[in-house]
Image 1: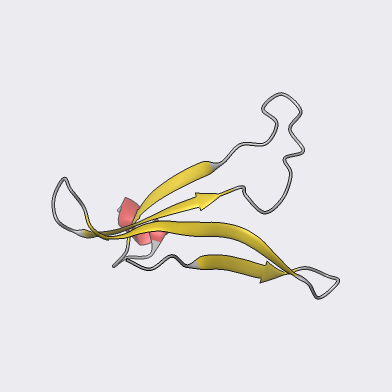
Image 2 (image 1 turned 30 degrees about the vertical axis):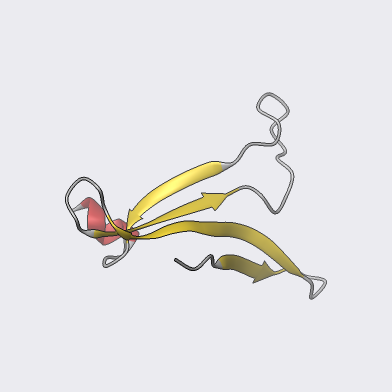
Length: 70
């Protein structure tokens, strides 16, 4: 398993980490390909009620996220 970093370029030209791929492989539920991504690790939250918080996403790896809804 490889760990990938999702990044984007800020206006000042520096790269900022937006997310981290935690798992990519078959789902334990149905065997279909999935990817697990953690976001919220590259910048501070502006929400003072929650503060800094990591959010995880479990998505199908073989379909666009919007298409997977249908």
